[in-house]
Amino acid sequence: MPKGIRDKVAILGMGCAKFGERWDADADSLMVEAYEEAITDAGIDTSQIDAAFLSVAFDAINVGPSGIPLAMALRLNNVGVTKVENYCASGTDGLKGAVYAVASGAADIALALGVEKLKDTGYGGLPVRTRGTTFDMLGVVGSAPGNFAQLASAYRTRHGVSRDDLKRAMAHVSVKSHANGTKNPRAHLRNEITIDTVLNAPMIAEPLGLFDCCGVSDGAACAIVTTPEIARSLGKRDLVTVKAIQMATSNGWELQGSGWDGSYFHTTRIAAAKAYEEAGITNPREQINLMEVHDCFSITELVTMEDLHISKEGEGWKDVRNGFFDATGKIPCQIDGGLKCFGHPIGASGLRMVYENYLQLLGRAGERQVKTPPTFALSHNLGGMPNQNVCAIAIIGMEGA
Image (cartoon, rainbow, N blue to C red; front, side):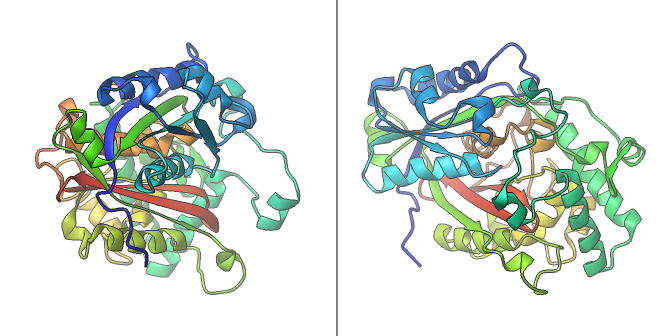
């Protein structure tokens, strides 16, 4: 395996717009909102940015087929802007581009910004893409809830979990995220709920009810990265550095045989193993202190706990119900509300996850700050469907950890 980028890149500053039904703001305004916080946090001028990466999943709806809207909205100094589109993993992929640009020496300071404007489409869920040969060949059919509901059914079958046990574990995931979201002023959904509320909610796709599904939101998030040496020369101390960024993309194996039973994410297992090796983590259940994972649906978060090698295979639902991932548990997960309550503006989600981990590492998360300062914070960003997807994992921590 290549040597990796551990501690070669520091996060100079981050910012995040308020997520939600942002009828008051277009995509440009959301980009500016996130960027202004990030550039102030970084303590630099726009002219010092050498390269930029714009993450967005639905280009025709948001910004069009290039990075020009980012350059115009932020008045960048004619630097190269690369537009990144990789399903719901676009945000972390954009961050990877910025981090790699700095680690390679191609840029001293690079910016990654993700944005999505979904509410103005007038569509109840994610907008419908135009069908074509590629989508037909890859088997992207049905709705997102329908596809992820099959993940729940496959998980139950493989591990012999009763419907009631799994439903209550999924409900706990949602209740936890709602409780965390109430402490986050930038979250889309800030209402506490109960287990009974989840279990008695309208059914969307068996066994996923209304509260098992994340919100459809507008929003943007931004990161500015550089080398640790440059960060220190700018007066920064207590640096948050990138320990690992790894990705894995489905190659058709899940669809082309009987090796995959539909109960887990093959790409997550691969990306996690690579990320832990790059970060020098040998026992993730003991060494990871904080997580943000891609909880597009409650079952996704539950299954991901096993795919990340935090929970034993077939026992993630038990850890969930025992409070292992609660705010007061061993490894708090979705401490900011997650996709479920912070919201899921697709291109921004991966960067939003890193933003929360960054704040927690620096002790700047306010009311939702975890009691024990984390050493390693992981974010897991997943794009696509269970049978074909791209997984991106970022691990950050304090310099020297």
